[in-house]
Image 1 (cartoon, rainbow, N blue to C red):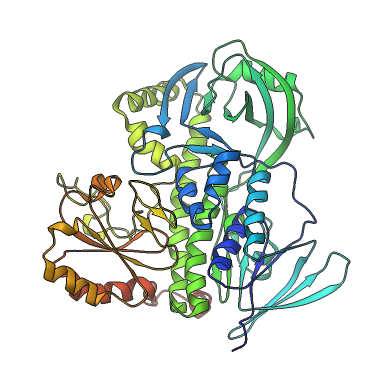
Image 2 (cartoon, rainbow, N blue to C red):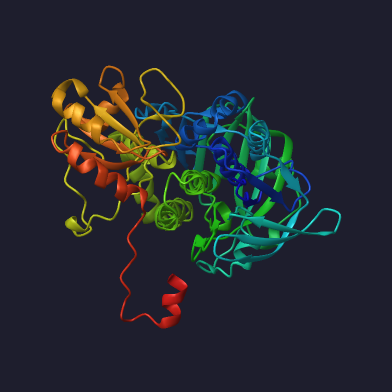
Length: 536
């Protein structure tokens, strides 16, 4: 049989590269084009959070990124120079990576492009997307090449990873909406002498305004500060950043020296109305841009890439139905809304000026540190470990679910399972990256006939894995001490949770639900015919 047309990936930033590597690992042919002729030497994204390190293990680049990057073990909060408390990443117990990595995006891109090249891929630079049409099973793209000529590209699917000013999104006629605001930030990488903690990111609030710091190693820090439009410059001096640090930063005698890079960038908040149009998808900044507070943008885009890629690979090789691709927009748009709301709240905290609001904010951070809420809730959220695809629980009427019983399962379908994907690390269950896993937790407590029936009922193409609290102690807090059967997706999110006595009967139906995507919504009598057509 002839090879299928490749998946066309528009944009060779980190998100597009992750999509490409994921597909190439599954022997899905790709073609990668990028309008720029070369990498940018500088970039504003520096943080890679714990969940992203987990996901990048799938394409075997996490170890290299950890060697090249600088570990961040906490996120500190300061107010008027005083240290209020810290969200300690190094106290998170349900990940093999209880830390973040600070690394310039340009280096992250180099690592990812080398991996794509090792897998047989190649980036065609200076090739700009100019036209796009679709028919029943093909995408037809027009492109302008680096020498000014034209090219026609036929693809099976298209992934638009071409940034906030996405040409793919414009050609797909997808709206990009959000609040009417535009924020200008000055950023710079510079050496700071004076004893700032070497393994932290920090948010500094003061009457003069907010500032963010992130250690890059060797006493070099990324400094980010909001500036008024009339104050925008092409570059910023060490003296400028030193004055900002003195006015807004932690207490101390600090000296800024040797600015390696500085620029101004404009941040807006937007989201695409749809992440899928026919055989085309939007990922990363092409689908959403958010406040830079919390360093979540690139990380959120990589979550998009992984969510889409395993489903798209299955659709291309026939192991999964194409209907599952409908879940990409549903899952990622809900998740992006949650992350974007969190970054907006983080930015709003830095903008408080009324005395009572400042006191309430500062007291809340102090109490959060004392009660360990910063460690148990804020740190996993910053690390994107709490991202879940669980459906809204209508049984609770929007109220918080009751606390689970001691030794009971604390996860629901859609939650991330603490695990390692594609790698083997001591104390962690290793899940395959290319198929569903039937996971038997505490198999020694299951009756032999139940285990045999589960194995016989296991859907074709799934992996069977049996672990307990001795071989995978990291799962004990999440799954408790009783035996349970889990169906786990290739991205490590829980698809179904089953009782051992009924698992053999319920497993095939649970797998079918997990691989066929969300049911089509019933048409609303209040929608117009045009709206119905747009929703199809």
